[in-house]
Image 1 (cartoon, one colour):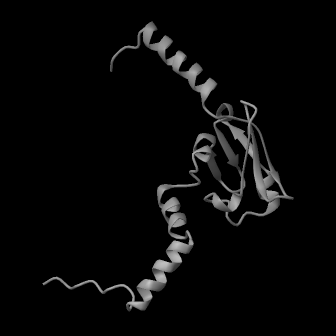
Image 2: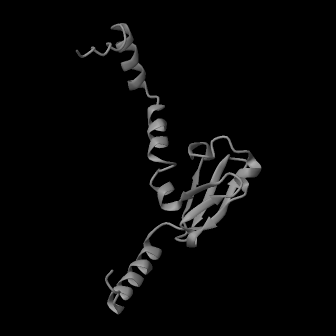
Image 3: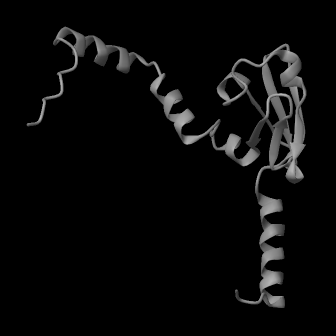
Length: 135
């Protein structure tokens, strides 16, 4: 394994400082029972709120469980001990509320007028064609 030089360490420290200055991090987090949202106050002065039902592992959590939020890793993560749920703050800000498989299931649940019209049109044609059996 290659030895780290002072220059390597200095460069890593500089990248860390840059990330701390530019990436969203949580300063405070709380569950607002009135609105049913988790509210995250960021270190840059902005506030981000989201409905916990969108987050993998928080979908069916009780209000008391949702209120027990901890901030992890200098504000880069949120943690719910009783639920064994961790979520990254940068991920939340990017709209990532769970694993890739979980997000794919959420995307499949999307409802829109265009999707409904396409389903009706497809149904009028007899539905999806059956897959052909290959010999």
